[in-house]
Structure formats: structure tokens, C-alpha cells
Length: 259
Image (cartoon, rainbow, N blue to C red; front, side, top):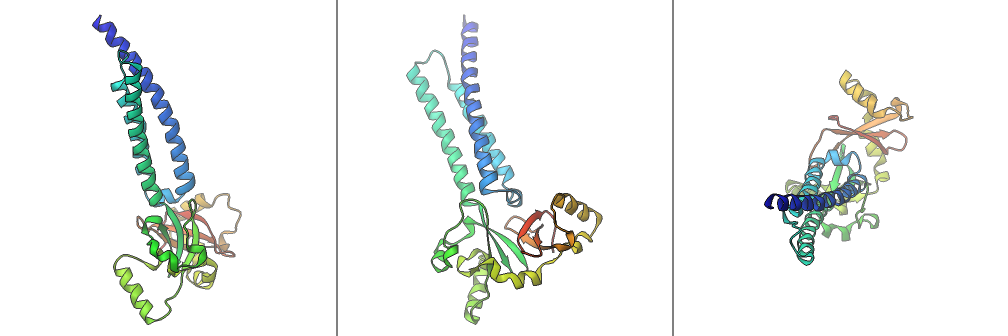
């Protein structure tokens, strides 16, 4: 009798857990698509090292909820008791997912800013919101998805230069200060001066040339018409942005040390 009861309970709990796992997997896939197609579109997810974090978040959310329901589900319980258990598990699971998604939202890349001799990936969490009131109108709000291009202006006077140096010593670079941003197009001459021919990068070695060739396969632009700049973030400095020499717009990003 006990064996039959255990078998019945196991089948009931497994059925509930399987259905919950399927629903959790669907939600997890949708969340991952939103994260990697919206907030962290390639290659910024890899550049900022969030892939592992997202994988852990999704795995925990998909596994833990169904396991809790497997443990709690029992056919001898009343329907009301089962609904209370399932609701509690769902609320806990949803809360964990929302918390993780909020953390990823706060850390999402929002700007690629030209600063001195490189492009810098700036995340939302790095930016002081108090700066927005002193920024140009086009930089007073951050994009919800995707990346906005900008450049860092020159200091207005010696006092501002000194103040900027003090901020930099505190870990706040001009690239993360909206009041210092100007339209990317206004820095065209500086960008063109600092950018180097892509062929120079390819000439560093066979491996580098092969990586670039694979990345640029299918791009209908003569390689001699391409430039590159190092692109850095808080997580890495070993990337380059490949620019169209005519528009100076980034058209591809490659995990190669550009310095």
C-alpha cells in the first residue's frame, strides 16, 4: 500500500514539475532573447562578460522552481493547499527572475563614446544621473535598447581640465559623464586622426589576419577602406571596432588587442 502511495505521489509530483519546467523554460528563452537581442546585442554581451551570469540566472530559475514544486506537490493535499504552494513557488521564482533582469537592465551598455584614442563602452550603472541636466538635449535620456554613439569634448578651461582629472582619479572618466558628451559626428577629424588602417592590424600576424578575415566575410567593403580603433569597457580592453573610412561608423567588433 505504501509503495503504491509513493508511486502515485511520485507520478503526480513529476507531472506537475514537468509542466512547471516547460513553462519556466519558455519564459527563460523569451528572457534570454530579450537580453541578448535588446539590452546586450552582440558583441556587447560577450564584451561585458554577462553570458555566464545570464546562464546561471536562467538555469537557477528553470531548475529551482520545478524542483520545489516536485517536493511540495502531493495528491493527498487539498486543491486549495496545492494552489497556495504553487503560487508561493511561482512568486519566489518570478521575484528572482525580476531581480536578475533588473540588475542586467541597470548594467546594460548604453553608449559607445570616442575618448582620446579609443572607443569606450559605457553602461547605465556607470553614469551619474545628476549629469543629465547639464548634457545636450540628445543625451539627457539613455536608450532602452541598443547603443548610442557620442564623443568626449575638450575641457573648456584649465579649471575644468583639473576637475576632470580629479574625477578620473576617482574612477569617473569623461566618457561616463553626459555633460561632456558631444555628437559623434563633431569629433570626425579627431576620430580620423586616431583611427588606423585595418590592414596594419591584419599585418601583425597570421592568426590576427585569419580572425579578421572570418569576421569580415560577407561585408562588401574593400579592406583598404576600413579603419580600426581599440574599444574598451570596464571588463576588457582586448577588442577593436572596425570603422567604415567614409562614414567612420563602427560596422563590426573583433576580440583582438588593438593597442
